[in-house]
Length: 344
Length: 99
Image (cartoon, rainbow over all chains, first blue to last red; front, top):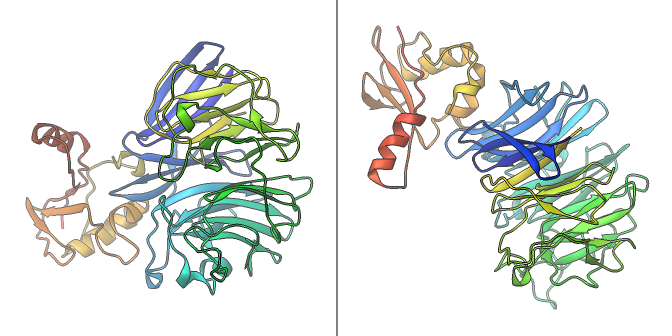
């Protein structure tokens, strides 16, 4: 039995089943956008919800059935002039939960997501006045931690790295093209539209990056990036995932920023087994009819045991249980999917 | 829509001589509602409306004894018929209020 939590524009759904037999329950939080799932250090499930009218909320559940909203979600101070528009991601490391939000910033919680503290070293960064939003807003959407080192990806600002547990941060985008900046213009310090990151936990200096401007990797923690696009039909997209057990990388190319659907409607996951040197279509089972739909950065998840799933903006869920060799489109259709989480 | 943010009932009895005071008391009783109803600057969210005894008000509106305060979110788009239905289905009655 596989259980998948699916966050959509209109509530969360729980998929349970195997093969072609799937049951769907929901929506939980009807009418609310469910933007991210996470897990507190004690195993409590976390869900971030948002509403165009009512702002954001953090929900906690012991079982994905009974949910309770916390009283104090991440909030910007009045003097900041910022708006808390969305919680984009959770990241748990030890006893601490991190949240990446829009307007872009980081918050931490040491009580399982109940109370949150602003990471001021990043949130009040000296470059902040130059931060500009991408099409999806000004959002911090990926967080990695390794001891005293942290990385955060902010669209459309770039990757920042901290060496001192988040007290100070430096932009790390050398080698990445800045969107909209002429080649002969001086490189800006910020303005890099990172879409997604994946990291090798055994060697955190190895990071792969799906950017607005292409697909990149770094082997030195972000000091230098190089393009890795051989075999991809397009270098635009929002997904970058690494299966740590097999070292296999996954991405889902979309045609371009102006046309965010698969090239010719050929929705395919691409995989790399050589750290990004080359890419190929991952396995089979793909629809032979055109699928003009997108896949967003939070809508891919895996369990490091060969099961991976992703959701589309068309509300369909795709699943593989054999490390990407064969894929199935699950029968149910839900609203536009923005977040997916395999439940252990 | 706010049902999952409320620990007790949709109808809450609060005290206060203005909407601002009444909301402050409401947030004491239901702290999870604060971030949903007011923004970072302490203002009522742009698409949230407050009605005092059926008349749209603001934070400074005076609230009389046993006044009824209703907090609704705006609904836009769609046909008039659907808009009306959505208004009924999704309204958030938090009201009322003996002040």
